[in-house]
Length: 134
Image (tube, rainbow, N blue to C red; front, top):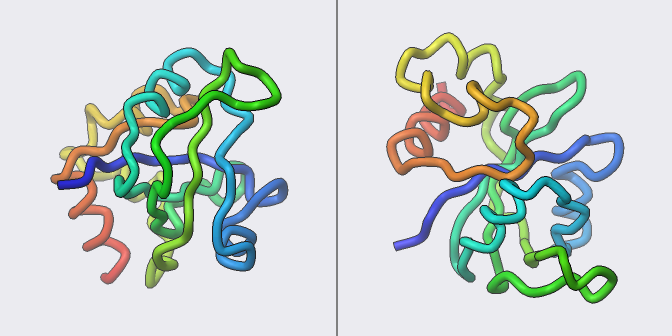
């Protein structure tokens, strides 16, 4: 059974469309200790939402973690993973929509909005996927 995550990216720097075009990428550049710890907990086969920050503030797609965490060759103190796209959501699910639902009150996206890598419970994963189909 996979674990679920949310990975944030600034779409003007690297968007979900870029991931689709490249077919896979190294998820690097994460410096926050809590976010790095979360990357260290990932396993090959886990799934992640890709969240666009900036003006969009929305979950836009699904990705799969295709490697176990490993040290960044450019900076051994950092941990990185490889990801590939799974599918674009039918429609983006905005942060405002997520905040409007009481069930997400403890979601780190709502509580610690600057955190760039965070776990997602199965309940939240299923709810966000359902919201994307409405």
